[in-house]
Length: 484
Image 1 (cartoon, rainbow, N blue to C red):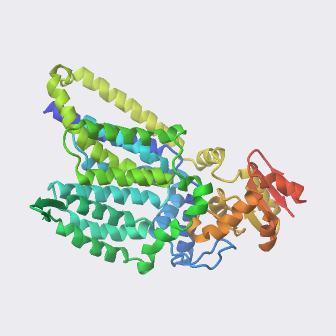
Image 2: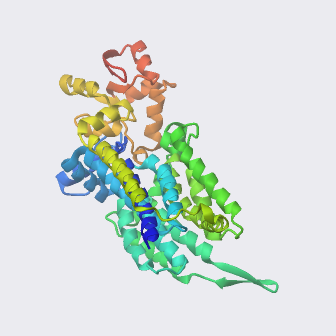
Image 3: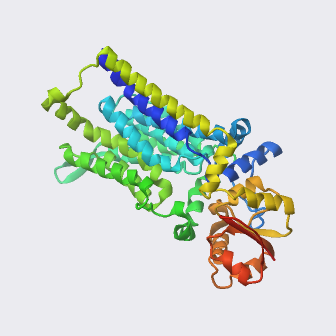
């Protein structure tokens, strides 16, 4: 009994570590700020944001905002706890997602804990304070419900329609929920051969019937069925985005922080190959579909970190049990009291170190310094210049800093920010035309009557403006500001 109680704590320790690591990171990314600004606008005006209010290139354009409750939540949390509060919220939601993943895993506690940590390392690439974080949470909850239904442990399918209502209002990728239900329905459909004919031996009718109810549930949002088209609208900007925007590109595996994705994929394939049982169609579809999405676009990698551990542990569990039977001497016996005390002391020390790091990342200034170093927000010096000098005219702004400028410098409407689905290829293409000094780049500045440019020093236009007769009024290690 003692040994059982100790083993049950391993997944809890893994979840604690996931929380400490995720809450100790700087959670805002370039898109966080325009989400905060949207939440602020909705609270101040007492209505939903239905058209663009923050740019001059798309001012007044219809923009149904999937994620409005999350945007309001983010703003309220920021008002109370600043960026540190967003860090804690991100850590909590991210860890909650992996708690539900842990409920769908197989095998002993050591195997589960190891798979959780590896999956979290993969998904942490996109653990940031934005509505997409809640797609991770709802995907994990759908996996938990569907896995329990698949193996007959529990039937919680009635939870999925209300979860879909919450998901559709929280983020635009609620379509993943339909995909998961359809995937399990297809995987659980069994076809057998009877003589020369094929016949369906098992049809999970409940799952197929559930899909139209999920579609109806997704329409229960302030924007109605139009919100279901959001993924298509976002995908329509992919050509320009895939060429230049890192989030939309395939993962760069030369970067060390992307390596866990490859480790998890190869380890899952290895365990499936080593297991003598035939791979179930549902498991194949889980790994194949989410691996494809992750390889296609870096923004989808996090979803693979949720789904792959479910298949990995199911394939590895029999192998771990067989190894334990063949090597009984290697099985760890229950720990004596003094060794258990030592383990808890080590865990306590690690917890204190993790909490110290979390506390260190609570002050706003510490977070802003980290974000400025990473190039995710405009330098404080450039903002101070614009606020003090207030140069007149429309501003051509950095794409990466667009969301932050929208939040920190509302008196200047923007050329573009991270809402690629709003600006589409037309505006994003013009932005790159100027930033990369492509043919007729100055015509874009003239067409929009732009008199002010704030951009990173690394873009070619930062030097071209000087040659074109613009006046350099500010520069630092990261940014330049030009006026006509």
